[in-house]
Image (cartoon, rainbow, N blue to C red; front, top):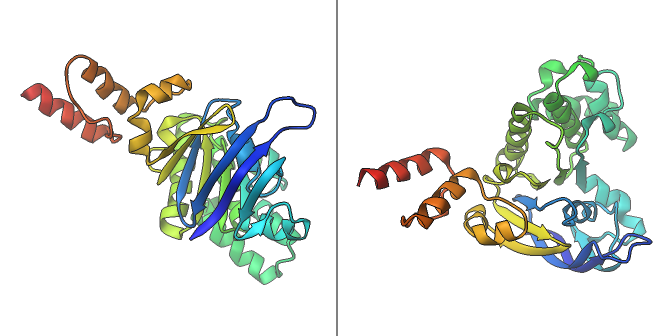
Length: 277
């Protein structure tokens, strides 16, 4: 079932001559993991901010759970359904204790206190931070802080979680932890996940990858179909995952590997088999 829809959406920031989004039309199915990929300035973050009415189209229409984001009477309902997680977790952490921070959003939504306790515990369990609930957030690692920020959004019980470059400030381990967490939210809990990123390796387990450049969608499909088009990726300043690049370079030397292999182990086995022959 469709949960987000963009119909010919154009957007231009006030005072700017250039459109940031240029005629975007797409839909997102409920319960899917969609990665939106692009270089800085491609329009991917502006696209994300249209999903919970932080930004509104200059023209065109965005609907979320059947609600028009331009309808001022539905803004609160839209934001209850769409949780946003941003680059810097410190900007989203407002309390001195982890569990208090996670409780902040549902408290502001007027959720009864007995439900808040359950929501906080459930959210922290989902992101594997329950044992840190009495810790001070400023003592946590970057990846742990980001998981607390995600828990704070989850405590609102949204249908959709939009993550705008959530790993940009994290080390490799923190990145892996956050991506593992959001993947599990989709696969195990049926949440619709929209991941905005410029890291190719964060997209390989998505159901769908949307590539943006200069405010337009230039590629849209499964990770295998998108990343196998190495020429298009490079044209827009993006590199394919390492496995695809290795196979692509081998093909230029006379081999004929399929470029749809994203798993490292499978890639190694295919190369070993070919070299063995």
